Image 1: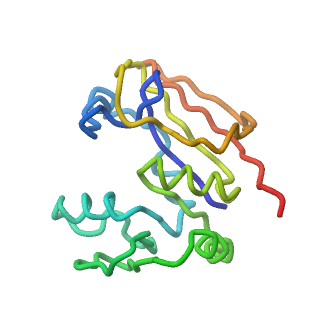
Image 2: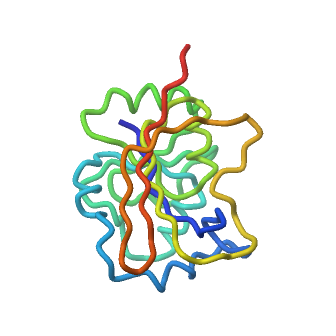
Amino acid sequence: MIRGYIAQSADGFVADKDGGVGFLDAYQGVDYGYEPFMAEIDTVVMGRATYEQIVGFDVGWPYAGKRGVVVTSSPLETVLGDVRAWSRPLSELADDLAQNTGDTWIVGGPKLQAAFIELGALERLDLFVMPVLLGAGVPLFASDKGAVPMELAQSKSFDNGVIQLEYRLAAKSA
């Protein structure tokens, strides 16, 4: 299963207008189910900007034991862990990931998650709505491809005001 797991402000932004995610700091220290989520993941997929941000942290590969795929048009200068670059079409990557025995997490950037949604490849989205209004920033999904129906599988609220929404997305028919 190809999955998304991402946080947004109550007004739909995953980062502030400068690309920062400092608004999430106030919500650290709460168990939002990350460990059980990661136990189901065997592959993480991210864009080049997210990967370079991880490299810049200088802490090594944060997804120990997980295969990594970086969607990029150029070779990786630094390779952390079991990571490979992917420059072919995303539809081919989605087909490749469908062969996995474990789940795949589309990490980070909303553009990559939106691309997988537009392909009909993202099957589940865990969306964490943070009780803060940013007013501007990087939107969760900015697409002109039209509405994408989702089915709410479950929801959970936390004492700090965070709400987790688990959505199922229907695969597009060929």
